[in-house]
Image 1: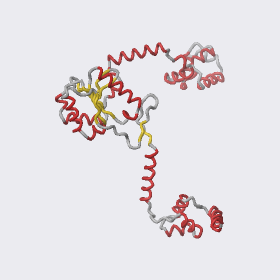
Image 2: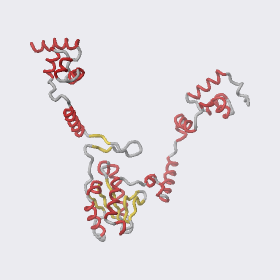
Image 3: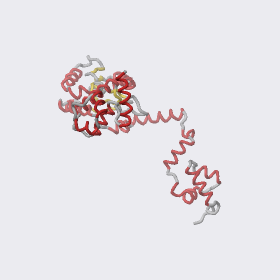
Image 4: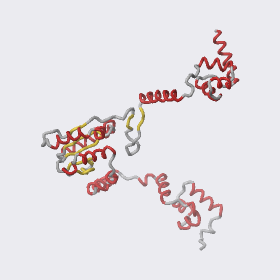
Length: 320
């Protein structure tokens, strides 16, 4: 079916409109500029395969008209209240709850509970929701909260503050909080068992917050606090750690050397000034490229023209 717009524009004008569209002009802008009332004709006949999909169109709109997509402070507050209300009524729908996959220290603690048969004596819930927080392991009837702490709970100031607020909320609600370091969870079931028995039999005579074990800071590693909106799992090495690694790497390379009696800088300089690289390579039972590498490592000349110049300078220095 032929549209009235087919003959309204020449091929040059149509190509001009397509180029404008490719350079960021929207269909709405084309409608206003050229007074075309049929968006369908623009999409199907004029643009065809180069028409943007919905995602690309929205991305372009956000860049061109950012003010149209900003919420007012009042709207943000309403959305926040709606979201918080939903999370209170549906705690199982949160991203943290949906993930529901225990970490390795948490798996170790589950093994501990089964080994000492705590799961047969007490009602225990993992990831129990106490809005807006979750308890790693909760003894429901005894109101005991078990928290497994990794190095981030010591190194990250924001996480430490969050833990403090969580502890205050739980203790105000009558819970006892036990914070166990991941190192203890992995290696010392007996210590956890003794401490847990003591608290279960204490009859409220013990402090509401108990720390078990020492949080082990990763060797030579520092936790990066934030990357965008989420906590990262990346680490950066400390300078002291880097120095140790450099020394270890150098020692490893020394052990891997095929030629243990490599000549010193002075010896190698005397050799290359008097003999060819091929002859020196036969002496040390290596290839001539190895001699070139040795020269580079000692900052010695490894080409004939450079060797002649530097040899003259070296002789002049020795005479002085």
